[in-house]
Length: 125
Image (cartoon, rainbow, N blue to C red):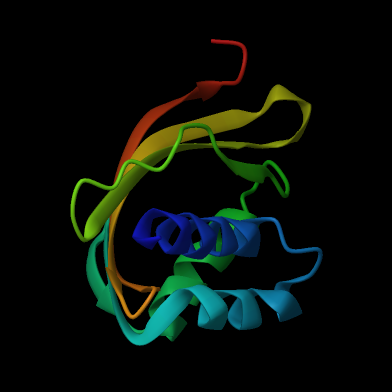
């Protein structure tokens, strides 16, 4: 049951990257994250949904255009931590960013996100 909750929270988090409009991002994040969520990202630690929202909006506003984020692996949840792989691709084969996130859940919501970004390059590579 906990794996289903993790998968749901992760997929809702990812859907914020693909929202039809920026106005939907906060609502989607609020459904997936605790209010005191901690994001460990490429630029260090940030706290709160607003910090995660800025991170999501920065990726959504990539100079190459609005891209698409997808989960490209199953959710592996050995304990209260879950991990999954993702890929972000911009339009017309533009820059691609791939990585693995590790998330911690509390009350079926994500309260910590650790982003391990990987490959950056054209989507054909």
